[in-house]
Length: 580
Image (tube, rainbow, N blue to C red; front, side, top):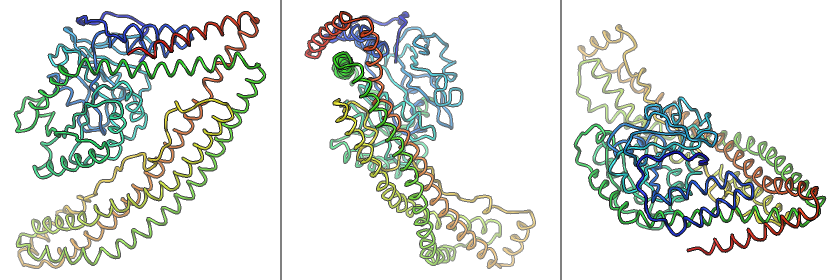
């Protein structure tokens, strides 16, 4: 977030100046001297919240987990947009202020808005995939929970159909000081949620796990979801995750009293603020110093190199870089052909597996259906039909849902094998670029790593085909009444058995379609990540060369003066890096 306009902060209590504040101010000034205005603005943004003792507790998780509703419940009033579709498009910071107000950051300037106008800037419907280019949103509220300096952050949900929202949340990770991971029972914790909290845990120690929407599931389902989430997270994080707080944020926002963990969650949030607030603020400053210092160091190194070597050498080096990147683009196109062929192979594999599944399961499902329907004692025709259809749905679901897990695992393994080829190719290209340019590109985002499975979540749901289960016409209803009265049930039994087969076939096809769609979307997202990675490789070198041309044209003195200035900045950067 870039804050180039100083506006009054509503009733922000002053605090003592932290040790890193002066170093951050100087780091921002150095960035501005180097022409890195965007970086300097980011440093000043961090320095401002360090000075004020503010720390970010981010609410993260899959879309539609109820994150916005949870934060509303924390502050005691509806503030954030909520809805039945993915809503939040940009991180929204809730912070303390005696006056209830809000502001948005667009084009490097803060603009004051009314809190009720937030949907215009942060909702997916009114600002799809952040088309308005909102860089930051802050809401000021007189909430006692925020008075200590704790800022609650609503982040875009991961795994929605809007891939930009997921990337926005991942980009915000370096600014997170503590996290609240919101999970659910239906569906349970996803792989993307686990990967996200794993990335967060690499930077922070304080993580609270909340199982939301418990009003929608049974006590057994709550227990199973909590145990599953705890096991998965502890396996991945390699550390205990503590209590999982089972709550209903919506009920709490509506002042409904439940036998849940709400009070304990609030107490632990307050305890976190009182005991760990200063430590988290200090840690944020240290992380920021490391991150921003490394960025400045790379900028200085590239500028010095561009000035010391002949312009023609720099031009040739960048020409070679462009050629290598062009070759990488061609390799991506070649990979597209490979992926298409693999998609067809995977589709044929899944088709064969679907046929085999139906062949094996139909006999077993029919036997289960006959056994369970034999116990139906209802004689009234329409009621009996409904009961038979419900049994058919239960039996079909019982066989289809476990098969979905099997198919996802198999397909992900096949997709992963193809992806690994892309991972190896691009990492090889980056290594080659690094060797040819004699530069270190380890700072680049690790878009390609060992975890190369599906990059999109499953959107499969069991289709109950409820319209088929209902009466097609008043005539059928009348016939069922007559047949029921005469105790003639065979034709209803036959209809229900046919319905069972249709359920199995339709949902097996939907499983296959869901997996194939995930392959396509994951491939597109992977290719987008690679292209973004390659663009970032050349940006710094191009900028340094442009500046070097200007100085060389101005004469030898200009070049020497710039080298001396860079040397002094380097020395000062080394001094700042030693600040503890």
